[in-house]
Length: 157
Image 1 (cartoon, rainbow, N blue to C red):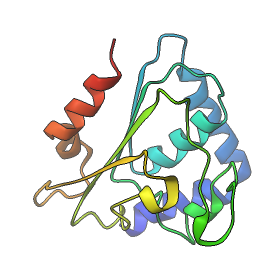
Image 2: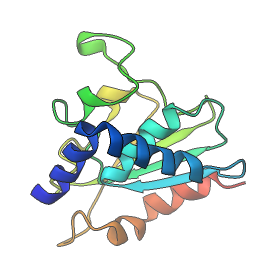
Image 3: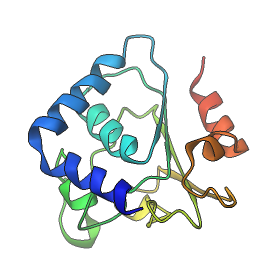
Image 4: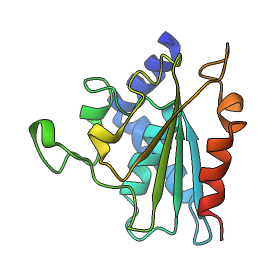
């Protein structure tokens, strides 16, 4: 967990790393990209990259084991910055009205400290808690869950 959070902190605090990584993700989103599935730090990068790509074609964003809801370390450092203030603070939605965002967190996943991201990102976000067993933060366990499969399928034509 400490190593994962150090990676997140490194991304958020080093502007050169942030721009380079975010640029790589943005470059991978082409005209035919409909689904983006991300895990851990990738959820932070994908959120920022999608917000910076107005009009992108992504229809489903699936975030797994995300630290996005951790207020001081992650949420308050996201770019773009918030559109409101105080408890009513809401981040920009990472796509158009047709984008469905599903966030999955394991109850034991310490990287995904905040399991339900709706208080920070709005009620449109779908939040689910899964059980990955002893491998709470493992991407493979998240990907094998039926909720993840349904969220991915929803974005496919």
